[in-house]
Length: 256
Image 1 (cartoon, helix red, strand yellow):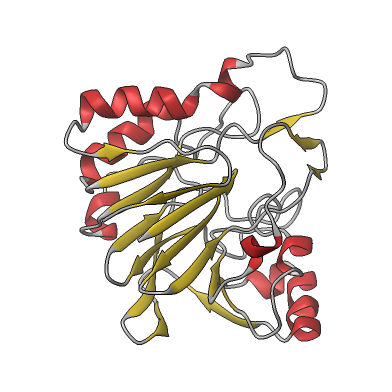
Image 2: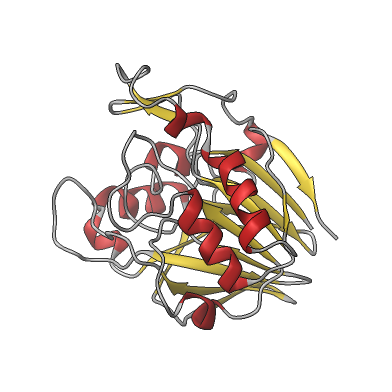
């Protein structure tokens, strides 16, 4: 199994020869955010057998990044996404993307021996800054030779480990894109608590240290740089049996 962290929440998991891309965000700037660390992902980052979108926020469902996918690529999104984001439906037609909408508990076959199961997340599922809740926020479990949990964006909740089930690898968000995290997020400490409950063999921190608001370079900069290392430190205390890998941007991690 190979995992590449491209920055923010964007990851590629290769399991049994199947490439699974999570929350693709391939841009130097998004609204008031700019990419502060890590080169933009290369063209190969957009090559995938299936793409998983955890929720509708623009830093996770990013239409220009989805437009880089090859025609016919399968894209899994929360149910209601096409209604909430009309641009997604237009893009799917233009690029011949095979879009599947799912809710927690749904399972999508990718290739023989590899499937994806949607699980709950505790996060705002709206397409901000407007609109009612038209789609749930999700996490996903990629089930192949191993089982990889991609949490998307989520807060800590009591039933997380029970719903996710046994996993070998957990990709957990440990930060954000600003100096303060609101409800529905994991910081390094809460992510370490989640890790202790999930008890995988290995974990990789994501969703930190990539994008930062323009003009806020000097405001709580440790919130930008520190979460990955802090997660590893706290995980060593709360989940000492879990092997935590903290890759750099674009770095590939190989796991047995």
